[in-house]
Length: 225
Image (tube, rainbow, N blue to C red; front, side, top):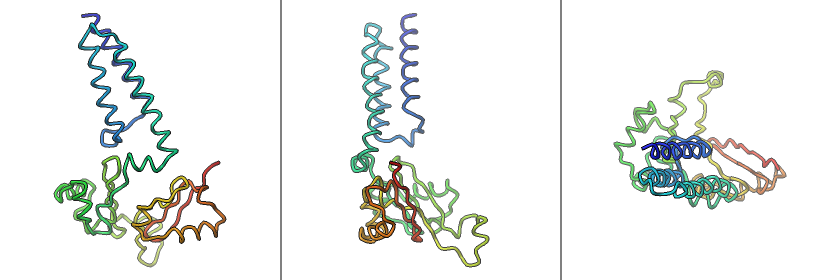
């Protein structure tokens, strides 16, 4: 009995340390690799707890390997954006300025009732009030209301005419590489962006992040090095 208690405490403490080191995320925000690791950790930890004849190394070694993988994968994905997009996927635009994309709903297996439920929890009565509804790679859905439906800010109050819809920022360049899906979605050519960078005397390889919102406003971050 005492042996089981001690083994349970050791495994519990080890898992607590590993999970804390991996960082904080809600279940809905877990990436695919993180979700898989969570399932594996629960299975691995159960073996030495329920089977007292098994060595603690049976759990310690696999837990260590999973920790190394989870700590190393984000570094690899950060350095190689193409691999990151392949593994984690890209955002899906479910609604654009009140228009529901039925193909994206079907592709992501989201029913109209489920979409309406998500909008209601975001304080939105119907799709026509939505500027953007984006299914993120983590599985969460971000909802942005149209500018006419938002509570006016101080800057809005200073404007005489009706402010133009700015939508959301679309990442066209990430870590020196073009985001083809965003370019195609906005119907913006590489030549247009190349000309803009050339006018600024900036090479694309020096760009950490370049975004454009739906009003055409550009935002750019240069790599620190």
